[in-house]
Image (tube, rainbow, N blue to C red; front, side, top):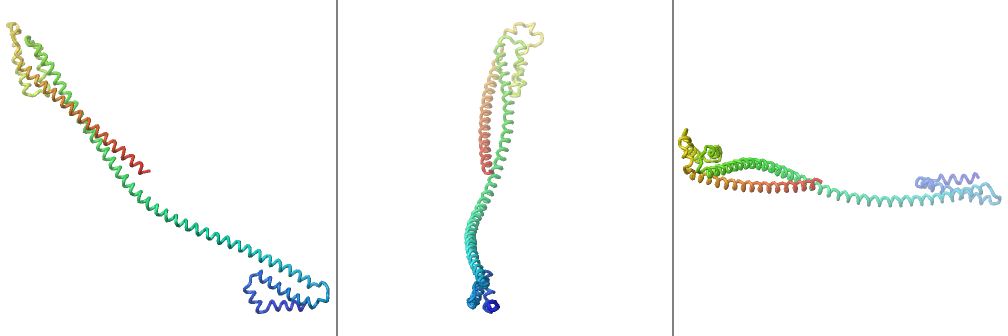
Length: 290
C-alpha cells in the first residue's frame, strides 16, 4: 500500500500533471486522477497476485465504478451543452430575423408618418380654406337677405301707394262720369281726395283744385237758380287727365310687380347657390376632418 500511494502521489504531483491540472475541467481531472490511480494500483496488484481478493482490488473496483460514472456524466454534460448551444444558436437566428423585420417595419412606419404628416398639414390648410369660404358665403347670405328685406319693404310701400292711387282714380273717374248732369257737392269728395295722394303730380293737383273751385256753386245760387243743376257738366278734360294718370299708374305698378318678381327670383337663385356651396363645403370639411 505504501508503495502504491507513493507512486500515485508522484504521478499526481509531477510537473506534467500540474500543467494538465491547470488546463483541464474538473471532471477531466477526476477521470485522469482515477486513471492514474487505477494504473498504479494495477502495478501494485500484480506484485501481490499471490494473495486472494485484497483491499486493493476492492479499491480498484470502486475506482473503476467512479471512472465509468464520470465518463457517463461527461457524456451527459456534453449532450446537455450541445442542446443548450443549439438552443442559443436557434434563438440568435430568430432574434436577428425579428430585429431585421422590426427595423424594416420601423422604416415603413417612418415613411408612413412623414406621408400622413404631410397629408394632415395639407388637409388642415384645406379645412381652413373651407371654413373661410363658409364664413364668407354665410356673410353673403345675411347681406343679401338684408338687402332683400329692404327691397321688399320698398316694394310693399310703393305697391300700396300705386294701389291706393289707382283705386282713388277709378272712384273719382266713376263719380265724375256719373255726375255729368248733377253737380252736388258730395260728388267732388272723391276728386278732392286725389290731392292728398303722394303719387299725383303737382300739375294734376292744381288742375283738380281749379276744376273743383270752378264747379262749386256759390252761396244762394242753388236756391235762386235751380236751372244750374241741369246744364251740361263740363268735366271731360279732368276725366281725360285722370284716365291718363290711371293708365300710367297701372303700367308703373305692373312694371314694379315685374321688377319685384325678378328681384325675388334672383334672390332665391342666389340663396340656393350659396346654400349649395355651403352644404358642399361643409361636407368636404367634415370628410377631411375625419
